Length: 262
Image (tube, rainbow, N blue to C red):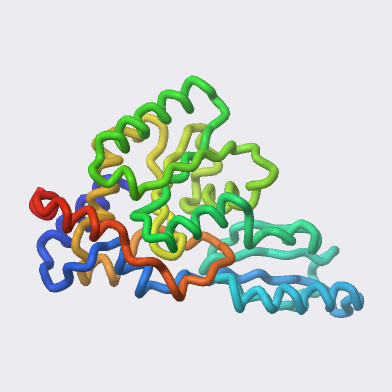
């Protein structure tokens, strides 16, 4: 997330004393995940097995922030699937096997588990494949977390950009901003609420100051500006967000009142 915008929202949260619920907790409890649209474009007739597969995709809406629809489009030469977030095209897929696990993966399951357990956030570190850059960024992240009073309630997960298991998650993260796919740098995504990913810190932007700013934002009092202009992008995932554990940030703040006035 861009540091200047983050600072603006943080200042707004500090100024607004109407809500003492912390940003991370308020978003988890009150902000529903934005929905994706998965559209199957075809010329008209659909094979029986395709219709059966699509019934399963339609059921995804019960557990996943996605809506599936089938649409006739005479101009297409071969049927295909397209994934949209708002008006943005996130990806295209040739057949149903290509979208089979688009809504779930081991890392996404872990992120959901951690957020439901009351963690402040999950930091997803998407590595570039350049070991020197990746290790440098990782050391900065670990040092920042070690020095944070909230380190115990922040989970760090590393992801290889070329991971086949997490290929859909990698694609989703690289679509948080329109130009990320062209940037060959390690990226740090702060994930909070119902799997909402902030715009990432990139390469040399992965600094102790910027990571502290991200944590300060999530532990600040919520405000109308933040509620009305919630930053970040919802990530497609399968989850039941209805029964989260109490936010662990409150335990730390109750035990350390001085953190409320830092």
